[in-house]
Image (cartoon, rainbow, N blue to C red; front, side, top):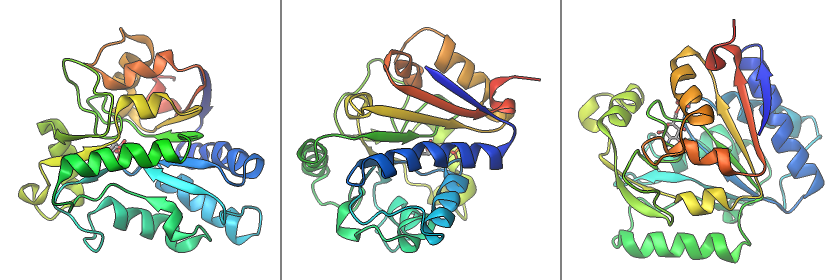
Length: 241
Ligand code: GLP
């Protein structure tokens, strides 16, 4: 594990954007695994800034997103497709047909999960996977469980996740109860992973994830086994004074 410690959120965003930029510059047709949540927003802003300055070119880049709520379509401003369009894709020259987010409106969710796995496979896997971490240790929407789910699958969201994500919705009742998430295998098969964490609210779970036992009860703990894990975290998220 390589640990990059940041002073604060803006420093974290710049350092994380550097990791992504290095991949895009060295491998212009790379496959980026992308994440939602509030943590990567600053990183996406930084990437957009560098793109606008002419330092980055996304025309041959492909992207695969980790997850999507079930029942929200691309036009819904709470869907992860909408999030990605607003926070990144609308502002860079990525070819929209090269971007993928699971279809939360699919009539047959099981089939959609299989299609997504095949698509990841057909792209040759992920070069760099960006991850945030849920406050219960989830990555993507892989929630604490009895076993690590390997493939893309339908997940019932944990109450803790519904509570945490309710801040983005008008009311907690509007938060979808299910999601489609890329499985642990596709995440772990990425050539490199960059895990982002910011703020003291993530400190306890980061300690468990990085230094605790490897267990599906803390899904992010599996990342300890990845040979090319880069952690970019600010001091607050690392209990550093
Ligand atoms: C959601 C996403 C995760 C993300 C997590 C943490 O549940 N599915 O991919 O890591 O939120 O979000 P935040 O960065 O806002 O704390």
